[in-house]
Length: 262
Image (cartoon, rainbow, N blue to C red):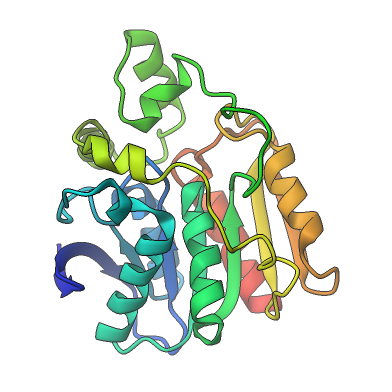
């Protein structure tokens, strides 16, 4: 597990695959860590693609910091950009999952030149009138609260595409989230509402129609904001919020096909 020092923190990242001029850069969601990308990274590597999965501050083996504002998606974006600069990556296929799609939007706002193509998976809407997504006691186990055996079983069933060892490590990462992280990630996510309309690279939006964390209409709404000539959509039938852990082989195939054809 490599570590890298940027912006006063040490962040963990996972690197797989042969060197490429435009690697995949994988950004995880609100309660998760970079380990959620393990099976996707293995599949991409086996097909000759390089990828980096970065654990955001507070996640996995990355440093925890003390202020909730440190965990705002705009600050995560600055961390990711600093990691890419340190690794001499100046172009990438940027992939966000769940809250990672918001981080990707801030990266696009701050450094659009680094994004060669964009993949957004199961992302929440930037503006939302409801007070919460459809998370209930069962689904919240994926966000740092192991509330009941039922909740954990539901989470396990959506992460069976990961090895048992990685799944156990990821579960530990989730349960060890600092409370400041949960607070700091919350809305409002300001100054990115115009990012989708201004996109200038090909973008793929991916969702599962059985998502019970982020309602499917939210990533669909985002898709419809993208320029029609640049947008692409893939919907997994019967798949929930975590296609990177539930059907990672199928997701990696969709990602490879998108990059090859656009």
